[in-house]
Amino acid sequence: MPRNIIQGGGGILRYLHRSNALVRPSRVAIANGLVRRICLSTNRHLVNSTAKTIRPSVILSRPLINSFATTSTHDDETETTRAKGSKTGKTKTTKKSSSKAKAKAKPKPRKKMTDKQKEAKKAEKLKELVKQLKKTALEPPKKLIENPWNLAIATVAKEIHARGVKGPDFVAQCSQLAQSISADERERLAAEAEANKAANAAAYDAWIQQHTPLQIREANAARRRLNKIKNTSLRLLRDDRQVKRPRTAYLLYMLDRTAEGDFKYMKAKDIAVRVTEEWKGLTSTEKEKYLRQAEEDRERYRQEYLEVYGEEPATSRSTTASPSL
Image (cartoon, rainbow, N blue to C red; front, side, top):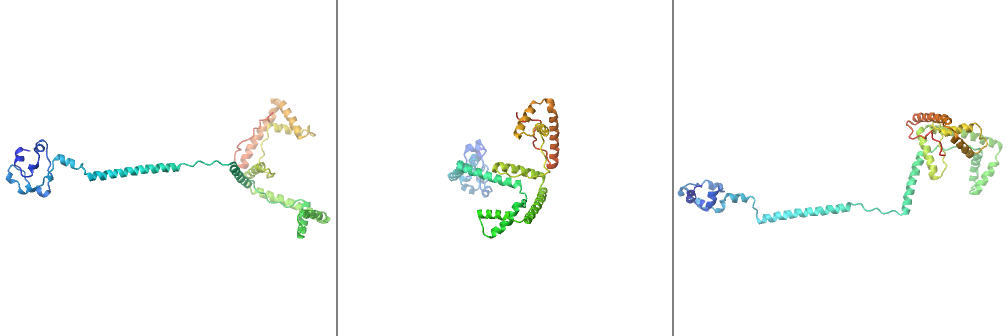
């Protein structure tokens, strides 16, 4: 900007520093109404007199305008500081609360069970196991009385019970009265016992047919386990559809030897000892016959198992292995 413009300017330009005007361009921020009445020219009289009344604060140089947007008041700084402080405080509080939550989330150490509690837990598990085994073992239909003497006791027991007899006297009087029945009554009771026997067999067979061979096999396995756990004597269910297990070569040899009649007058224990000694003395050629028969029996078992139970046998006992000698 020429120096003469600054010197001859109106009241507005007097407030501009010459260094700002000459060294770098200046920016003038004025109200919109005043722009229309200000004209910068070389003639001082052309400047409107109203411009002399403009406050210096409305004229800002470029450095001041640039710093205006970034400069904040003390109050603003205080509010900003408070806001940051409050945010920081929240973060710290959140971290503390999260750390507390993590500390609370840790599982408490389990208390060691006493011997009494361990025994109670073990007994409860055994009770549940027995319950499941009994369910799997199946319950055959109740049998009718098949013995004539038991039928006679049952017949006279009603009469003795009607007299009000109880305890040991009840058993004694039932026995005496049953012995005193007539011959015709005994024949009738014998015939009734035979009829009951036939009825029981028919009912049992019908009940067996209501279950699959696999269910009967699992029921017998459960009965064996119950006998071991409870020390009972549950009978295995009789089912002709069950597949017979394969026989070993040693067992086939024993069957041949006992069938010859050489051990007719020997005890079972002595027979087993004698046959075991003989089996140890056989040559490989002499054992080959029984090994081949055992292999054929194992194949028979596999095929029948698949047909009856609908699945392959999980494990099969080795037919070539002899007993531990």
